[in-house]
Length: 565
Image 1 (cartoon, rainbow, N blue to C red):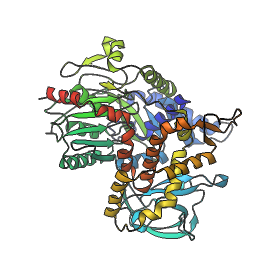
Image 2 (cartoon, rainbow, N blue to C red; image 1 turned 90 degrees about the vertical axis):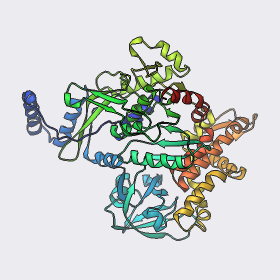
Image 3 (cartoon, rainbow, N blue to C red; image 1 turned 30 degrees about the vertical axis):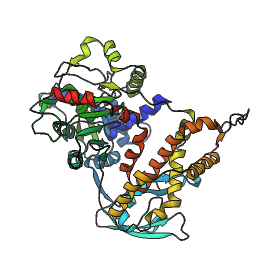
């Protein structure tokens, strides 16, 4: 089940983020493939015109493209026109709409209700008066009950300056509410959070590499320096990648002189390249720790690889995804895209960090990644390096050993946290998220009292992060909520001998061990719903073992900085 989960996630990453150096070029054939192309064309015509039943020619063409790709590599893919619209928004980092994050609340007969997770601060919906927890029951003159994701995009997105009327059912209110919202340009931020962990340590969480990422990163870095930042934690965990150029420009801010950041090699000379540092970077003179994990991929690995090879940052966490292939986009007239591998990229030391693969078999490819990470779970970096053949060992600028052949191996490895059965039961059914949603729905009004503008709302957010606490009464409500979902907390001698298949029982003493952790998690979910994603990190970092262990490694990061001076 774990393998299937990671396979599903990783397949999504192929479409949404794990790409490098995307450029656009029309799909076309060359003379030496003319006869093969004619053969394909003849087969297509014969099938479409002479097969016994009617044939969906559009589907036939797409299946043909998929067939041509299946023996190439796991990252050469076809993206249909509908999905490509979402991909473009993701990488352009903006769209026109009303400015909400949303979720679907399950309803009767599969008629889900669209609910506001939170309105974008300062965005059209927030200005109009929408609150987190509002249930959208109608759009203009149509019901929104049973909406799908496509329905949301069709009805709520639209050209900026146009208006849409949204009908809302607000928990705790007797009558439904209506809001007329003027659509606007909605930015999609790629820096999830940036703040000072202590008086001299800045933290930046980078979610992906889109067109605006370098600008966002520099704004955050300058702001942190103004607040006294003398050292930085750059968090690339779960960052699936994106534009190569953004990774190069961010790396350049840490790397001095004209050092190589990344190179690409191909059988096609035009696709060969070397990218070097060329600016006096804002962050060249401070120690840096980069956090990575198995979902750090592509452009994230370019940054981590360049900073590791030049002894410029201490890499902490778990071995990264292992994607060293560069894709180029070839669009078709209908808006669909062939995204095909055109070169391999190499870190400055010459490492090729692509995980080995056989043709385009994605299931085997991702399962091999799972097996690799599981085999290394109990090992430290030195033990792993000892097991790796010399052919995959390389040296950094100052002679440290680094390895290729499947991701970036951190300098300091931190294994995954173990999860107790109680926590697994809660998270597995998303009970933590649902309770937070219900809690916000019944408490939103008290938070909005006296808040008149965005600055006051952001001030309230900061106060919530610092001072709000999940008290014993609220946790008791959470336990009652769990009981309603057949999760029971009992004494040592109260566990029944016969337990129904859909029931779970946990001893009170075991739950008490997880209580403060769970309170903190609930607070973080509430903060995201009330305010924004940025509120999550300063709350959860209290229990972020990877970050907290990394903060004890500054001496090693400072030693690396000294090697560069």
